[in-house]
Image (cartoon, rainbow, N blue to C red):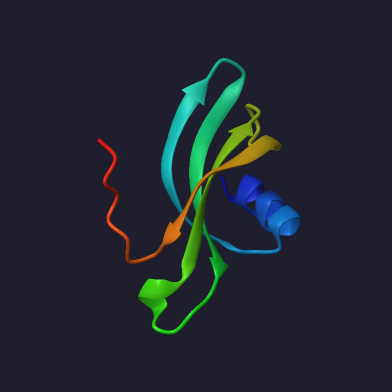
Length: 79
């Protein structure tokens, strides 16, 4: 995951903050990674992006897509 996070940071020019999920896929892994896209004060108003990334068996980044954009302090209303 560290290898993929570094690759994602290089592409997005934003450091990944956390991994909210990781699960095996047919040819590797799928993970959801949270990234601070716009830092604001107070911190709870910063804009976050949730990215779904596909990794091969060695942890190399194969692809990614942003699945959600939200304010850090926002509570997820989806069920």
